[in-house]
Length: 479
Image (cartoon, rainbow, N blue to C red; front, top):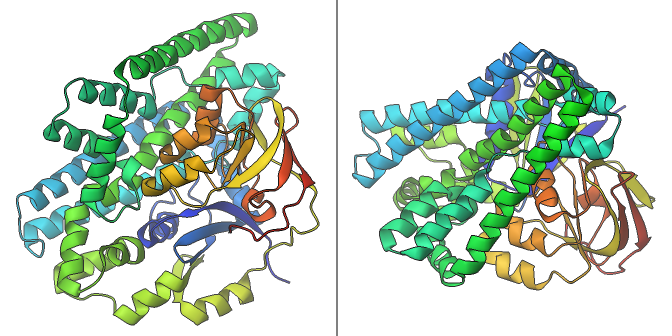
């Protein structure tokens, strides 16, 4: 009998990330949450789906109990902050060498790439530390102590300006006095917005287009409203903490708030890699007669290092197979990598997806309260170049359904009447923006993108954490 698997996430993501997802479970088992020894991810046309067995999902939850210890939680928060700073330093040094046209096959560059690769793997390890399963018991402990979902949501909402609000503030300053140098700096500071874009020129043009559309008074007002909302939330939190008068509640809430902020920072690190290191991908593509997209999306980090050290590249036929279909399987500390038809065969042998055709409703975790009825808009890419198209397809009653939300989707999410995701606990990005826009949100369903398709009519009951299918669209699914 085949093992039962839990979906972790689905999204359009590069191979290097998937390989790091496996490697962290081999090299960073000392970090909280990184205890699973079985993991599977497959990619079809660049869209990946990642899974853990139910047994190992539970192992991560149990390991996350360590975070109930205040001292361990505080130490972990500091470790994550240090890891982010170390990664950013390594990334900046590597780009500086690229800009200076240092020989990429030279000893200095290779050593700096190795340092960058080491720090990147830590980022992925801590991403799992802040993941829904790892913080499960922290969430549940706080819920039980408060006995109120509304108070729980209020206390777990961060009250510091997050990465997205800081990006708005930066954009406002650039808009007041735009120069090419300032625009370039802004794109590097917030490179996560340009993930999966295989042209630095196009990314710069997108930034220019965004700036040209900015109304300084409107953006200023938006920032002021966001800051005022943070202050209002702080006041509500102080009142709740005064009522409950519990150091444990205050500590648990602080941990979840910090994890929510740091998870977005961690995501920004790996999502921004492509734009930050674009000159390297461009150079490798030219030297191997490959496309930039192939190098960015279908090479592993170790293959990039091997090319820098030994000028050895994956063969073109192999990369083409990966672009079609690949599968990574971690089992007992060993990473197995399959492509093409062999990958499809392995998937069928070890993995069996549960049928969802019979479902008329399913559940998830509550991120923000409310009940609405609307029509599903299923999104499977976060390429900023498609933002205009995706935005135009959002109707007045659109329910945004995604594997996970990313910062590129903020304007799209702003038009939604509700958000439903496969992935996520209260520390996830969807939880943050649903509260910012005050719309119902159900996260961590694990199956929403499998069950729902464009045009389905649904009820999102975020008071109960239930999505009900009211009417099926007879057309084809987007995924």
